[in-house]
Image 1 (cartoon, rainbow, N blue to C red):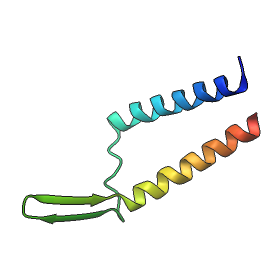
Image 2 (image 1 turned 90 degrees about the vertical axis):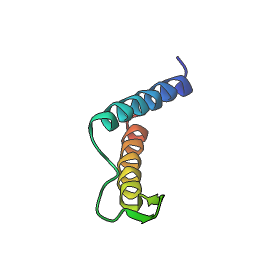
Image 3 (image 1 turned 180 degrees about the vertical axis):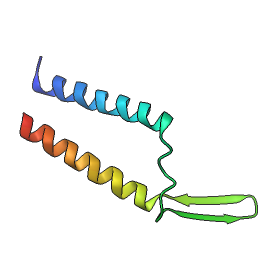
Length: 68
């Protein structure tokens, strides 16, 4: 199996596991996330959730890069 094939399998596994975790853990309601409600309209901007996901993915890809 080529190097790109292994990487695609790892990325697919990570996305699959993240999807499973998100089914059971309510991510996105963290302090720092912005929610505006006015009438029937709601605007939601998950700043803190985005930062945490970015840090976790950066760490994960760093580990995968070192492991290769």
